[in-house]
Image 1 (cartoon, rainbow, N blue to C red):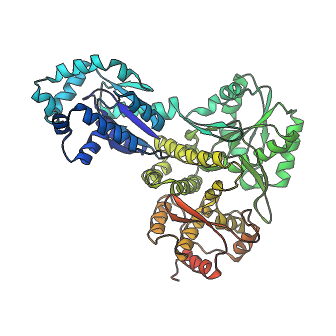
Image 2 (spheres, rainbow, N blue to C red):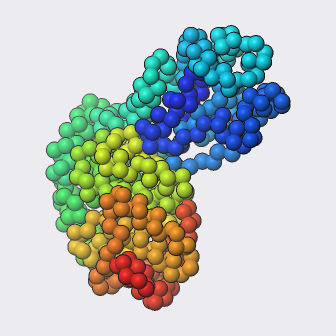
Image 3 (cartoon, rainbow, N blue to C red):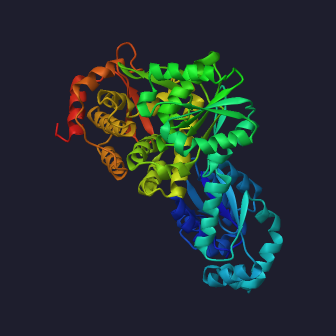
Length: 531
C-alpha cells in the first residue's frame, strides 16, 4: 500500500513525506531523488539536455516499476509526476493519492529555497513567483484529482499528523476478502461505535446476539451494543468463557442454548466481540445453529485482528488436539479497532506480533522491513504504526484466503510455524500463548529448512532477532507429548506430517517425509545446542 503525495513544486512533499513515513512506520521514496540515482545526473540537467518529456518518461517508468506489496510506503512525487493521467491511474492501483495544497506565497518561498536545484528555471530567467503562479494556473485540475487534500500552512510535522490522523481515525483502511462470499475487513480507530451502522448497510436487522467473554463484556460490548441499537437492531448479550476454555464442547452447547433462549432466528446473527477463542466459538455456533446464521467479527486482540478473524475458520479443541472440530463459515464483515490494543497486556500484544512477523516473512522483504520498523512501537501502543501493521497482515491474509478459501493449497502456507507450534501449545495445556508457540514453531521450521538445505543459514538470525524484539521466545525444549501430538495435526496426510518450510523471505515449500535425523538436529538448534 502506498501513499502518493502530489502537489506543486516547493509545497513540501519531501519534507512532509519523510515525517509522515516516520510517524506511520512506513518506508519513504522520493521520486526526484530516485530518478537522479537512476540517471546519475541532476534532474535539471536531464531536463536541459533531453527535454521535459524525457524527464516525465523517467517518472512514468519509475511508477510502472513499483510492484504491489502489503507493506506501506510514502512516496513524494515530483511536482509534475501526476500530470499524465496514466500516472495517476497507476498511483491509484497501488494506493491513495494525497494532495498537498499551498498559496502562491508559500510555494514561492519553497521554490526560492531550492532554486539552486532548478537550473532549467534559472537559465530561462523564470522567477520563483512567476513559476508558482503558472504552475497553479495550468495544473489546477491535475492537483484537484486526489483522494484527499491537505493545506500546507504550517510545520511539516503538523501536516504529517493530520494525514496520519485521517488514515487512522477518519478514513480508516478497508481490505476486501474475495471468495464465495466476499466481505470487507474494516480497520479504523473508533470503529466499535459504528459497527451497527455498517451491519445495517449490509442488511442486518432484528434480534442479534453479541457474544463476549468477561473482559469484552466490560470493555467493548457496551459500545458495540449501543451502536446496534442505534442502527435499529435488538442486541442480546451472551456470555462465553475466557480464553481457550471457550473452545470446548461444553461452551459450544451452552452458546447454542443461549441463542435459542434469546430467540435468535435464522434471520438473526452473532457478533463475536473479543479474541480469537471467542471468534472461533461464536463462528462455529453461527455455522451450525439453525444450519447457519450470519456472523460478524469484532476482534479486540492483535492476534485476532491479524489472523483468526479473517478467513472463515471456526472451531473448538479436543483433548487430542487444537481445532480438531470446526467448519468454514465466512463472516459478513470484520471490524478491527486498533485503539483496543491500548488496553491489552504486553504478553497478548507480543503474541499477536508473532502472526504479524509470520505474515511478513511469507510476503516479501519490504514487509519484513516494515515489521522491523514497527514492532517496538506496537508494544508501546503507538496507534499509527499499529494500524498500518494490522492492515499489512490483513491484506496478505485476505489475498491468500481469497484465493484458497477452504485450505486446498495456497492457504496452507499460513501454517508456517503452526505445525510444531500447535503441538507445543497443546502439550503445555495452553499455558504457552498461541503467539509464543508459533514463534517457537517458526524458529524450528527455519532450522529444519537449514538441515534440509532448503534455506540459507543467514535466514534464521534475522527471524530470531525480530522475534526477540517483539519479546517472543526463540529457544525452547519441546516436550515428548508435543511430538506425539504432531501425528494428530489436521495437516497430516496419509500418516505424514506436512511442514511449511522457508527457502527465503517470500518463498516457502511444503515438505513431507522429513527424516528423523533432521528433526532431531533442528530440535537441538531450537534448544540452543550445537548439532
